[in-house]
Image (cartoon, rainbow, N blue to C red; front, side, top):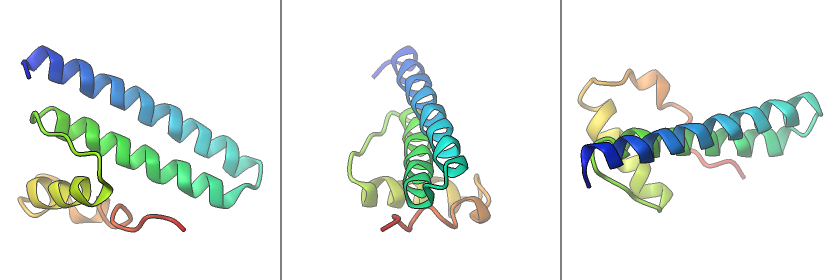
Length: 92
């Protein structure tokens, strides 16, 4: 994948993450807490997929995205572990 294509994909995913975060806020204000948590999780998931797209990587399975994020960004110190604290736990 070319650098320009990686950037386009990443930008698209960041826009999607922002939409999900907005939905989460609306649901939270409405008192739909479980649904708000789910939208928040998917906002994080999509934002992380945007990040790894910049490296030319992509995974659709949650476990693969989480594993890549932990291995490539958290364990290397590129991202502070406090920001990955909730990402490995899918809401039920």
